Image (cartoon, rainbow over all chains, first blue to last red; front, side, top):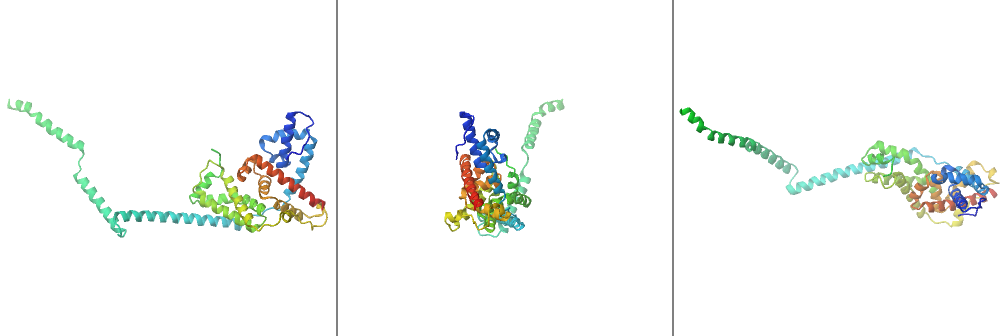
Length: 170
Length: 181
């Protein structure tokens, strides 16, 4: 890649900087905006000190200008519409797929609960058992704390009368 | 984790948001089309390559997880791979024929009109080997940075610089020949 541009300063560090500048210009052209950001300042500095590099940069600038004269690319509205139509197709298919998966899941649950039955049968059975369960639960259930307090009341009544009776008999 | 300006739009598009999809199209379609056109030099093939890339985008949007690479880099890589696929399917012409720039235009470059020069430059770029062409298209026309361009091409930054330097050297030689002719 290096074509042996001489470094007028003649030092090793200068050689490396010149070689790097030459490599950058031959790869990215003469426009500093296209040079890698970390090398930009060093390449610009090397360019100012070396006439061979300047000559190379002017050749690359001519190539940049030629490349910029290439035909421009027009973007059609049809292309945008086509890309959006593809989105609609994929999103629609995904939504359908989610519905289908949900329906399959519900079918498999129904098959587990009541194999071969239409949907309304297991639904009714589940609803009925839920209603019966709740009703029974509400009827029979009484909170533990209330029962405890009732027992405690009875116990305290059984314990207390001795003194009361004594007082009353007196 | 890298900052990705597209991450939110991609997530929304993946969830079926039409506005986000439209925004992604507006943001990326022009650059993708330019990339494909300069790689393939054929409007119809380029359009197909871009549409195929968009189809892949819509299919993968819901599963996209930001963090590894920028979404734009992934999208350009998909577009570029679509271009490579199409180039591979083309009947192979001899390299000499492919590298030949028509010299039927009369006189030196100064007498060529703008359209002829543009056409000649386009043909010179088209005649480059695929990866050199892709490197030049990404760095010159798409104005990608060296790290992003290397990621899109799947090569190291050093390899990218080598591809660019070789491609530019070939182009300079070909355009020089054109000027002389």
